[in-house]
Length: 273
Length: 313
Ligand SMILES: Nc1ncnc2c1ncn2[C@@H]1O[C@H](COP(=O)(O)OP(=O)(O)OP(=O)(O)O)[C@@H](O)[C@H]1O
Ligand SMILES: [Mg+2]
Image (cartoon, rainbow over all chains, first blue to last red; front, side):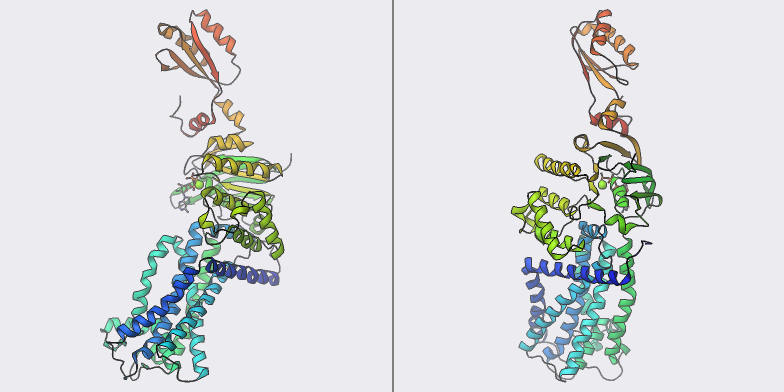
């Protein structure tokens, strides 16, 4: 675009203002359709109870800890990864209904749509984390290492969630079709379960264990276990991401952002061009 | 003469092997309605998307109000409104919520966006439904909301891509009325449609598009004149078919078709035939006609003739 560009300062301000308007749009949707929000919030709570008591009755935690203490970091990680699905379906819905075209034919800031969408997801993510913490405390989970490490764990989840939501933006723009996007949502479950979130990876066959160890879900789970002081922190000879989980999560986040922010922006600006 | 507000020259656009546009030219003077008419797949939507800066042409160029749609897209966007083939509004929000959001995104102040939303809802008869979610709107209400969403900034040029497809006659009439009002205020409208009566009703000029090119332009009357009038003759005695056919052939230059046991029909090239002359010719040949009719062709006939030469003789 070689428009006689308005000054950068003004463009940035509009990007921010328009982004906020779009965050407001998502909140407005939730207000008009509280059922959707309630369903989204009940999901993690149900997971806590279901996995905590159903699986927990059968699974032995390696170093003899409580299964629900072991499980919660995994569920936090799972909820963090739901960002991809949420943002992907929202982007694809806008793209297939023509709302995206309306945005693109308006004199609004071009970057506002992806920034607004990922920003709104961050708010939803915070709410879901809050519900998860409540549900976790109810079933006997708690962080054991004090305020700072606990805050670090949540911060790590938020950073990774934001990075993941950009992957959602890109996939949503790439599929363009809300039905395809909806059909992809169930893939989320095997992806998150192929990790250390619910069971230790030690018992898996070699190739599966390799995939699970390098799955970013595992890195986030391991980091949260370490920072919360929950059982299941691996010892001995384990894969690199599990031995250095905090670094691994930060690297994953950086890599996701470096790859998907430019890809998404290009896809958004260029769609149909 | 003033420069056209919408101007396109030699637009080409391909999607893989599909040549959606092959050198499309278009020129719409300020304050008029241009109807772009064409069968499915003719390239209407592709052309509108290029003009509305949603898509870049492979070749050729286009200007809106003097601004290039590729190089000065931002300036173009500030001057256009677009209502596409679907209702591009947020289903989960209310009608008012949609208008306010799009108003804010058009960089109106909060107060101004609220005021404009109310004004548009009031004026286009959606005030009663303003606070209901769009999910509960009828198809016609949705289209109307979509239309007024594209009016928030009082656009100089409004693109309407099949604005009434799938609507019942009453809703279509309402959309037509809205378009007429906007035109009366000076908005230039480029409207694509497959409905010929829609173009007949609304358009000052028509561009017939087929296979990505404009194959005919003109006012509805001019287009009708290109295929001439149609002459229908009903005979008192079917036995006179032979001599009657000879007379009609001499007048029209082509063989007439039999449209019944005692009737003939033929297209007369150009205008200028008078009913009295035709009756006299028949008389002179000793043909007694029960009825002679000279009929303006409908735009349908023009359309079929232009877009599929085999269909009509
Ligand atoms: N994004 C796309 N990818 C591939 N092919 C496309 C794309 N958009 C349009 N086409 C093709 O280009 C041609 C022209 O399409 P276009 O949508 O412009 O037609 P139209 O005149 O609007 O038709 P309709 O009356 O059905 O809306 C069609 O053959 C269509 O299949
Ligand atoms: Mg179309």
